[in-house]
Length: 293
Image (cartoon, rainbow, N blue to C red; front, top):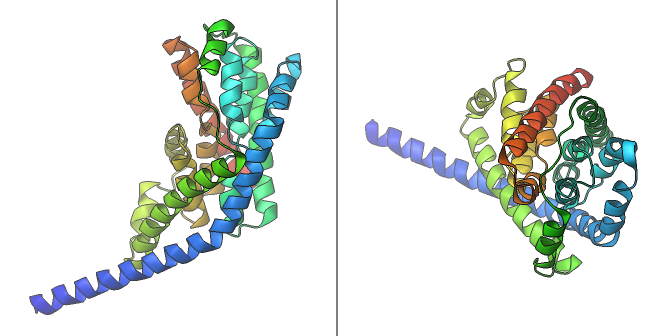
């Protein structure tokens, strides 16, 4: 009996592994052209319009959070890092930088398009993120007067020391490859969990308790990597995450923005305070957004 039981379990595991693998490859092949085209457009936008966006955001004065929230929603990769550099140089306000951080949607848009999410749902998510960014951006500027401790001359020297950027096509290919690898890994694990009947276990990792999911996903979102947004978006696409919890995590996931902030603004306590503010805004924004879904 024990031998038969073990053979049954091993056979079931082998079947589950094969099914999960085939499903993940199918999903990956279906998403590949969509991801590549999306990242090609994102890289083109960043290369062609990035400098103009930076110049525009430095000239708008009190309209900074409004413009920052709107521009942050455009699907391009490096704007959160650029705005962090501008803040560190004392060119923009903290509210403007946070508006960009909260509204940026780097990985979410191409992933949701590739998963077949309705365009209306994607647009709604993006618009809510923009509104969250703008509102909290103005609130932070109204209440706080935090100034950076970096000098613009130091930042210029750092910029000049950077290696030359790769071409648009190469950047898009690299970005697509990295993201697709993450998607395949996460999708495989999720599919395997479903095949083994462990979807309830996955759901228990993010319990459907008011506030708790938003607190957890906002913490995950603080990881300065696209893997966090890919993970959260895949959970949402699989039905394991609510829209409010998704938005809490994506609002705090500011791309490379936090990395640039800690690199260029040398005041660690101030940077940690900014992270805390971003986290709080993400949690509150996700909770509020959950009322609209």
